[in-house]
Length: 160
Image 1: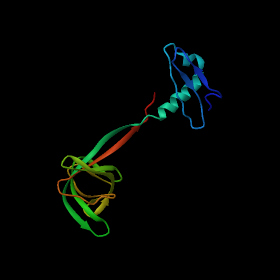
Image 2 (image 1 turned 135 degrees about the horizontal axis):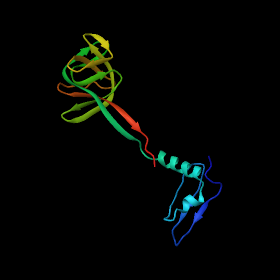
Image 3 (image 1 turned 90 degrees about the vertical axis):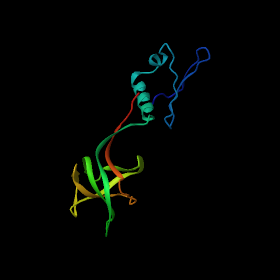
Image 4 (image 1 turned 180 degrees about the horizontal axis):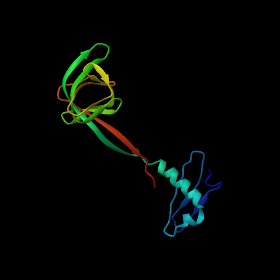
């Protein structure tokens, strides 16, 4: 959609108003008190400008904690690597969820859960109160008493 095929300029008492459409979709707007922009440009073009400017805003990210587990022991397993023997303290731990490792109150790693083991069998989820083995993708530096926090990220686009 093209905003305009020409520049629109406005010069009231040394205040400037420019609207232009270019190949790079860069739009600069100054709106004055008497709503000059609404009288000059049709509503569908205003919606276009709002959508373009909304796209420049960073999205709002809300995190919801699904579960936490405390590492009790670290095991070395052939073909798998290091596995964190953990007890799920809250919620549930689910495979392929986002996770972070917290050591002494500091986040030291954020990534995804690789696999979950329960009694030597791979499983998809483990509920609170149960023990399991957890591997994380691209992380093996587990220590006793680390906390693995599993969460979902909800991304909401911001609008003007």
